Length: 476
Image (tube, rainbow, N blue to C red; front, top):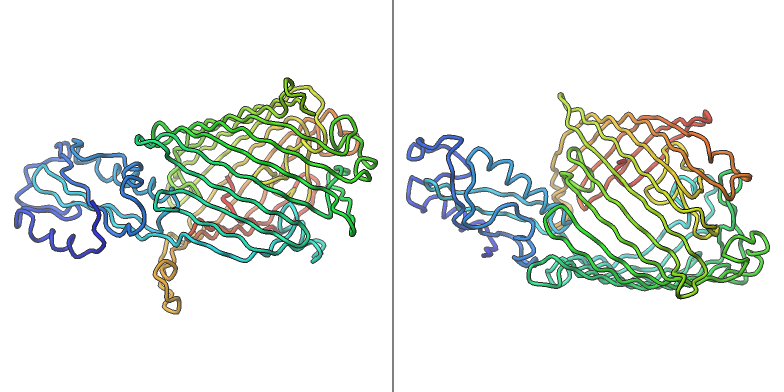
């Protein structure tokens, strides 16, 4: 059931069986006969503060149910894990579970602060692989502007709707809709989307481990269209399966093909193909956007191009990631992650060849480089120290309750990375492939609400190069 205020919780703390009730696990003489190994039963679950989010979305994330019988000493750990599950939905700024104990009966109360879910925001972006690459040139012609509408928790069912219009250097129109649950058991979901994009500039080759671009002021150097649909199955809280089918069509100016005949297959100036992708995830991290304990594993099978449809490409690949997080004494934490990708020996056009330097797959200290290849292995390690544990400040000048309570924390970091990229097609133009690369450094992380992370790092790589870098996601 749902209650929109704290009044009833306070009222119940004084009225349930008079003085025999316990609040938040406080001791009471009437229940002094219960030991840590005693069993208690959950009598009720009351939700407080979820004004938009449907109750069944919340119940889906809990590790306990009404009528469950639990060991008293395990309650704190069970409730804490459920709080983490709720926060990992990205629906709430806070989620706190407390209880009233009446003998061997428990009344559980879950108190929420919901996030703001609708973000009609202007776009001001840089058309580069990351901020550090753009900062070298400060080329404002690569600015992208426009608008995006992101509606999280649409209809209170944790659905996501997104629409984007980008203008300027890169022009893009896209739409995305995700439905996490389409059946009563809340195990199956669907999502679909489409996009159209065109760009005056495109990278046509990797030379000396940097992307080389071709730019046309009069015409669009590359145009792309695509659509996808995916089915998800989440049988329990921490394991999920995804099956995706997608279609992509792209074309470039003839000049791009003259500069690199292997940009697309068969020296053509266009390509079109279907792709299939299967992804299995096992996610046991505490807080997904900045984990400190737990583990994560996934394996992804991808088939780009379907021969029976006479597609232009025929590439299969297997990618897997494993990440582990340890809590150490005295405010220290250690984490390590390994990513590996294997693809077949079939020819891969430059358009479909990616390894390190894109998205989250990169080697710290090599932010200015791309290391392209057909296979790679990447190891990341991180030692953290909690410089300032989670604090909360109230920004009185912000009139909105969903934004004016700001949690934050700071962590110091020491890290070391290593990687190897195999390339059998374009290696004659690049020196970082087919050789071990490694780097290390130190930094400070700032973590706050709405899944925001700011990392300020100083890195040194194998080449002896060093520099300061800025990133916006957890390092591992």
